Image (cartoon, rainbow, N blue to C red; front, side, top):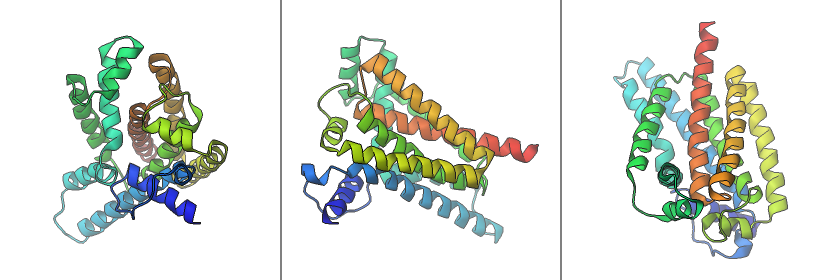
Amino acid sequence: MGQLWNNFKIAFSMYSKIPMPRSDWKKENMKYAMCFFPWIGAAIGVCSVLFFYLMSWLQTGGTAISDSFVTVVLLLIPVCITGGIHLDGLLDTADAMSSYQERERRLEILKDSHAGAFAIITCVVYFLLYYGVYSMVTRDSIVVIGCSFLLSRTLSGLSVVTFPLAKGTGLVATFSDHAQKKTVRKVLFCYLILVSVVMCIIGGVPGGVGVALAGLTFWYYYRMSVKNFGGITGDLAGWFLQICELVMALGIVLADVFMKVS
């Protein structure tokens, strides 16, 4: 139990801003860290759903809370909980992909700490589109979107212990090398089945749309990373997670709207 507790602490210390007790970053304490990575998505999902329902209850009671405020806070909840670590990967990848350079140069751009023009453009477009998505969220769709944060991290974790790596150094390489891959794959695959079934049951068609879009995004992530970078890196894993969550939320909300119209 002590080793699992240390793996839990390392996962949350690395991929969230939730305060955790100190833990030794030893190989033994990183074997199963990826098994707890989706739990951060659970924390984001719970906070998002509870906040939305609380605001809806207050608005129903006559409290003057604007829909714009609710939408902006929903946008910021994942950023506040994760500290923007995955968003950084999205922006670095945007710069690398927009450079149209050779593979080695693209990998160098991923490591560059400076934000290029395409990173800034991508950030603005990303949040504007996400704002539009959340402005259409309902009491039904927010629950399905809450589950999607687990699904995106489950798939991202699977990529770390399954996909080829672009290089032998970096955060993803560290977690991949130290992971008990066979066990982690089994656990994450169980998460994948469970979360997908739950999303389809509670969400119906919108839930199924979200699961299908997550699968398509995962397939594209593999093809894109291998073709353009020779494998995945931490930045590419962050890119996938952010894009996957946006695509799922968009599909879920639009499917929910069309289902209610029809």
